[in-house]
Length: 341
Image (cartoon, rainbow, N blue to C red; front, top):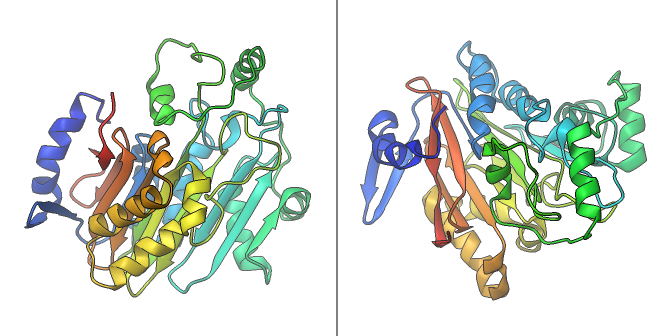
């Protein structure tokens, strides 16, 4: 896995390793054949799990579910799954959605006591006439489907929550999901500052050329009880159109929801924009409507039907992972409107 020092090198060699073409000042990374992309550093391990499915001729839908389950079960990851930081009342609630090449989709929101919300979302898609189940109803459905009920508040997450309560601050910090994940100190940072988001969003193209996507998160740390961000909302946190491509988002979900961000990116690609240009326009639309959003982090990641990949974020620091038959561990820095740090 590439570390922080490897990011610059990766950005320079990524085009050579995966194939690229230049369009003016824009360099477009192109993946060949079956491929998978995902947000953030922890996307590397998730991609490799997805690749284990794709490399054997498996479906994109199966690949993204397998990939998303990796960070959901990672006890080092405090922004996704069973080790996620809780809301301000100490409850760990999870959100996820999944979408296939035929436009079928499933979602769960504010789901407690179930470690793999992405798999529950898939069951919603395949076993019910609905798209989204939430809260107690989602939990009831998950248990009926055989998912084990678990206590998700880990000792580490509980300790972070107890520390946060001393000041009870609620202030999202850009890119904290990576800073926290990379930390080797064992400390949680200042109260209210640690693990305030984020998400893994994943998109895959299989050997048949079909696209599927998945998105899963524990949401913002210390959020209000019942708060749901963009991650489980089809069209906001994730959108797939098998004729065009797919997009996913990460960051402060409220800003993505207001702009139906992932759907916007896909529609811009339909109009002929590259994945990077489409992601950039989605970010800049957020900033035009709410200039103060420059203090937040939102990033978009997209792939089109040709395997071209692009990303853009409000602030620098966003990273994304790419995987195809040539390489399964590439991590690249996303371009951004504002450079910070």
